[in-house]
Length: 169
Image (cartoon, one colour):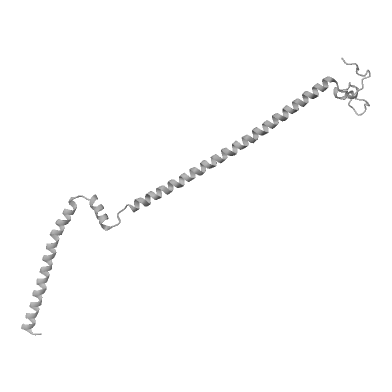
């Protein structure tokens, strides 16, 4: 096993403060405490190579993280642009609807004749004939009443003048 066997006297508790020596001081020296050997030079070179590989991998990881951060920011910008476009589309749609309503309002008839033509287009064709027939009946009746009223007023005035002449007031 090793060239230095443990001490023959066993202390009751080597790690106790009462003991003057510890097992660690009695163990053989570690390879790092000895002078470098050709194997340790190779190990040191491989350690340096591993360290360089780790640094290279770390640099690649940092580059990938930076690329991912750039890609994330581009995605955020694209998402914001899409959101802005969607909002712009909603505003444009609302403006288009409002413009359609304004245009439809401007297409409405401006003169009374246009309104009458529109009204006539929606009515029954017999309706104007019924109105004409009603007027044809009402006008003679109005003239008849006017004539009767004029005759009564004329006769009333003649009677009044006769009564004044006969009875003398």
